[in-house]
Length: 208
Ligand SMILES: Cc1cc2nc3c(=O)[nH]c(=O)nc-3n(C[C@H](O)[C@H](O)[C@H](O)COP(=O)(O)O)c2cc1C
Image 1: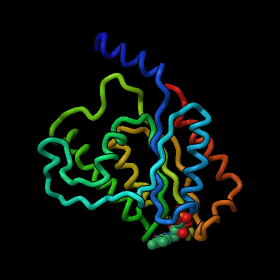
Image 2: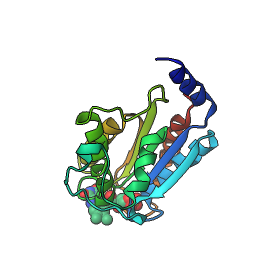
Image 3: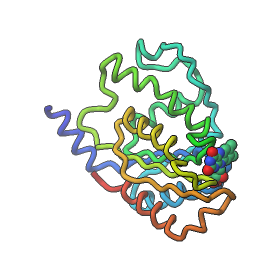
């Protein structure tokens, strides 16, 4: 630890919190994106610099298990993950909004998570740090909706998201999970959902 780390800490205090909001539903303006928009609005009100991306609008292809990333920590596929990698690695907070599909994470956000394999390889195969020393602690939140209220309907996705936070070195600070929200707009049936999403947004944006 030396001057460089101290300077990083000083920079941390000065620069705004950056937040990446990822919409993971194929249905634009649906229940999970509504939660995300509330969350990001509160974060922006709290002074954070917010970037929102709809994953289904991106060109994201499945991991090919070629293991190239285990040699140098980089993915060789030239698609929109190349835009996402630096964001996933650099932002201060990440919020992922994704509905339940087939009792788990929908295909498109799951592709993004699978494609975080270069980060896994960097850390656990190449034994290199993912994050710069002295950087702000990172925070994350997961927002989801499901049509049913089957027992454990969110458990598959939650496990996958726990893995993602671990790989990205993100501490989860919030979760909003709403069953029985099948039709677009059903999230509005939960009056407390907006307040929870706003609260999560504020937590993600807290200076640290
Ligand atoms: C392909 C597909 C699969 C789904 N699978 C499930 C499921 O396994 N369990 C469930 O409770 N809801 C399931 N749903 C319902 C969605 O989770 C629900 O409609 C949710 O509100 C969609 O969120 P959105 O409005 O953000 O797209 C599924 C919906 C689709 C389109």
